[in-house]
Length: 212
Image (tube, rainbow, N blue to C red):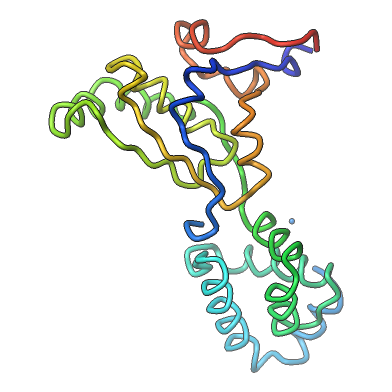
């Protein structure tokens, strides 16, 4: 169907964005749940210790996440890796690079699309960008943190291109998930993900590739 057709980004647009993997900026399993029930008085302290360990390892602060939901996710992946408590899982994260990356990817939820929340992009175009250019000058340096598959930084590039030449736009896009970074660097998307892009920008910066 049409939603499966691949759309390629304009090469010049891709060229102004530096997309990098940067770890520093960065759905009840049985045996772990049994452990939690049997150690109910100790659990809060143990989870607090786990959150501190995770922050040291990843710079992800689990205090900013909904605790019940996050603990269910962590319990699931810990159990999947044969652990019956948080201490065991921390040891695995410290010693196994592949398991560590699996954990980071499991925690991060990559929900992204071009020009998501159109009203915000309209405000950006009409007020925010002109104000920034007036106060900071034309050569802005922009950082798109947690850029996921690249939808946001590419949207930013297109939005700014309406006001200044592409050569004057410099964007650093980072994410802690290597898989989505790889996707962003390739610059191939389906029609659904670019549905929100204004027609003139879609025509200018995208082209269909292949016959899929």
